[in-house]
Amino acid sequence: MYASCPRGPEKLNRRKLNTGASHDTLVEQSIPPITAAVGQACHRCFKGEVNGVTLQKCKKCRRVQYCGADCQKNDWKQHKAICNALHKLENDNSFGSVLIPSLPDEPVARFEDLHVVINKMVEDQAWHIEHVLGRPLTTAERNLMGWEPRCMGCGRTDRIMRMEANLNASSPKTLKACRACKMAFYCTEDHWRAVEHFHAREACEDGHDGLSQCHINQEIRLDVGLHATLSQRQIDQFRWPPERVKTSWTSLTGSNWTNEFGAEVMKKFRVSEAAVGPWMRAVSDSLSMPMTILWALENLNVGDSWTRRETLTLHILGAFEAEIMNANLFEEILHRLPEVKTLKLVLCGPELIKILDPIERGRDIELRTCPNCRRTGRKSIQQLFATTYHDLARTEKSKFVKPDLAVAFNSGASEDCTESWSKTMSFLAKSNIPSIFTAYHREEAEEEAKLLQRAGAKLLSALGPRKNVWGSLLAMQEPNKVIGFYAVNGWLAGGFR
Image (tube, rainbow, N blue to C red; front, side):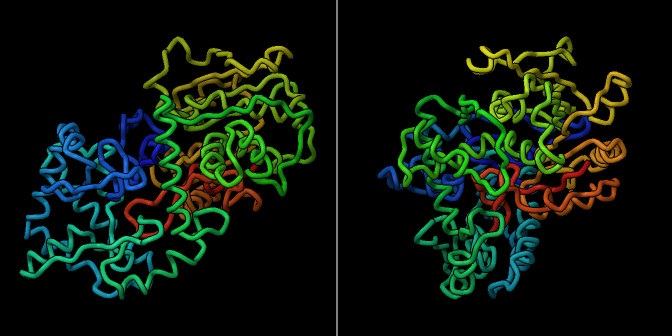
């Protein structure tokens, strides 16, 4: 899949590899947000109409837009290669004659069928462009392919319609955007009438709170705006670990993000209830991991004796950047379990080899905690192992101790390193280790649930496959599709013990 969230590494790179294989890693700097990828913001400074700027398309590739000559000139070094490749692709009639016939003329009846066609079309175009470039696409270039504006009814893009016009010696059509969100597109009024209901009025399954695709698109624009504001304050990634400590454990059953954090967020960031939305979504994105852990622990244990353990041990599988960069956010677990004295985090993942000093392997690393925790002698300890979980258990032998919970966030086990992940799943199930797996969206969660069941896990219905009440509210458009979203820990693939 080819996409990136506005504030982090692209989706493919967020997969949790469970072998020694290598992907690009680490966040590429200044990746244009989705508003720039769909032509609603400058590809260099990311400002759009909301900032009072007028955008103009690059005259050669006609894929990206700029607010002025200065931004276009400053971006040329990064844009030149893909610009030339896109121009060459568009003018390759032999390629166009093969590509275009696969697209339907009439609006499709099923989005799933259209998504298959679009995915194949994007793969073919990406292959062609990589062949021209002589190298793999960068994250920003992949985003231009995955988030290219396309008709919701038939999948056509402006480039495809220009290629059709060239082949037929006719005048090209251009896409029009939804007037409300400006992030959904159509090629004709007939196609728009066929899909408008799904876009503007029907609840989007992978969104939140029963909102439509149009409404969530509008939220995404606000989220990009908040990120731009934070970036101006030199805050590249939003993280907020609340410092208050609860006086006792309170069940999360029946609660939600607004109930648990709404008042705190408004007070902390001095925003009104009407303006708190983007802040709440950013908070949910940063705190989804600890809150999902607490939800899993509550559902996998009988009673609340687990909340009073001297040491609570968590094993995080397939760990890499997200868990390392957000280590301080796990302190929210201590803050909600005041009787726990030590939180022990064991991070395990083959990709850690890229950032782990060998001398640190398995060594206790005490993380900095808030003043209240330090004053009361409560602490958070981290251990790092650059290996798969089943191999860790095998090499550690008698030193391996079962955790209170093993968790794999957005593992992508059904798409990458499936054989290795299956070995880990089998070990978890046979060892009766309380475990939880999360996923970006429903399809992924359902496929991982099948893998878990084949590995012998008896899934608890409350923990998936189903929407995760503590998944991030920060939705992102699915790449290579015309409808649908994904979110960090958006779904629970399965929990078992």
